[in-house]
Every structure is written in C-alpha cells, then in structure tokens.
Length: 88
Image (tube, rainbow, N blue to C red):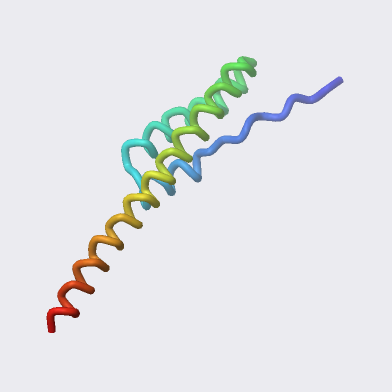
C-alpha cells in the first residue's frame, strides 16, 4: 500500500515573512498554511496540495516584496547620506 506524504506546511516560513518582511502577504500565507494539516487529515489530499501551493506562493511573494522594500529603503537612505556628505 502506498503511503501518501503530507504536503509542505509553509507555516514557519509564513510566520517569519510576516514578522520580518511583509505583513499582509505573510498573513495570507499563514491562513493557507494553517489549513494544510487539517485538510490532509480529513483525506482531502488535493485541497491540501492546493493550500500548500497557495501558502508557498504568498510566502514567496511576501518575502521578495519585503526584500525589495528594504533594498529601496537602503538606496534612498544611502543616496541621502551621500548627498549630505558631498555637501560638506
């Protein structure tokens, strides 16, 4: 008999993205990630796979938007600092 393995949870990653990167997308990831184990336990394997895919998608989107945000902030502050230093 083949044993079906549960899909990736993404819960830890979603929580980290929520805390450190992008709150709205991380929360969406957490919502989808929280459904995965209960759907799998109920025998709804396709729904659990879909929830895992959605959790992964939103977690990755939140991560990359958070990284882009911090890069833009660093460039703005770096440019401002360089402008101030060149005027001295």
